[in-house]
Length: 241
Length: 126
Image 1 (cartoon, each protein chain N blue to C red):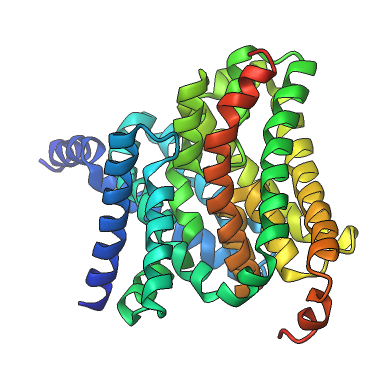
Image 2 (spheres, one colour):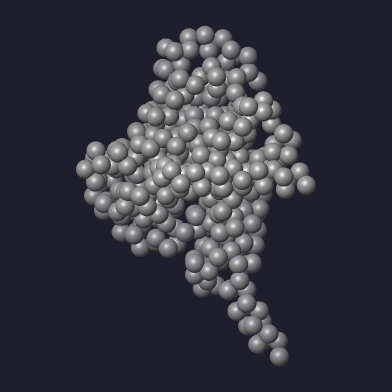
């Protein structure tokens, strides 16, 4: 009698959003504990660890991504209000921002053009398909924004989402080391560079370094999302895509 | 109630942002406009109410969690990633690091030129 019951339960669970949602939170909590045990080493990035764990579970249990996302979308949805929430740390850095707004604006606009231009250029040079080039172009913008832009310019939004996450991870894992290598010590400069190149995942890492770096990274992430949305369609046309 | 008030305000911000961008056909995403609106509101209000600070810290404290569902999507694109792995890996590594260093460099040069008195204050921070 027990066997058919378990099957029924499994049929229910694999079709309900409950499993995907719980799995996402549990995997993240586990990954975050691991990250803290490793002394907050950027190499044990909680996003990477959580993603790998979830993919292994999904592959082993044969649950398709679409079914998983039915539940995980509730977490994904929070990217929207989290973007709005960036206004708060930004406001708390108002005095620094007042002083630095001009260099910050110049750095963000140049950073956005460099990020998108170099991505399209290098992808083209190495023989990537046009679809992949266009999906790579907005990869430094935060996920919901990048997906929207990707759709507008003719990329694949779901592929862009993945590329955005990996870009953020690259920035979060290697960023602080890179700044040390180049002798970049100012926390506001580090924050701006992190936010432009590695959006929310870089910002999450920046908040762990200091509140100032986090706030500037959040600012850069928000403003570069804004700038990417305005500049990218024009840049893509200019590059003949 | 505190967290509930805060999260509601954030959702209202996003909602207004989404409606305005669609209504006016703006090329920027709704949440980004919502952030700008909330920032303007804080400028007018001159302080961050506790309930908003609680909700914002709650969401931003674990910002990386919110990227997990999109990250798992890598399994759907496995074939394309395998077929075009070289340009994709090269672009992700090279251009992300290039963007970071170039942006930092530009900001340092621009600060030195445009805000020459910034250095003295920089040393004062924690």
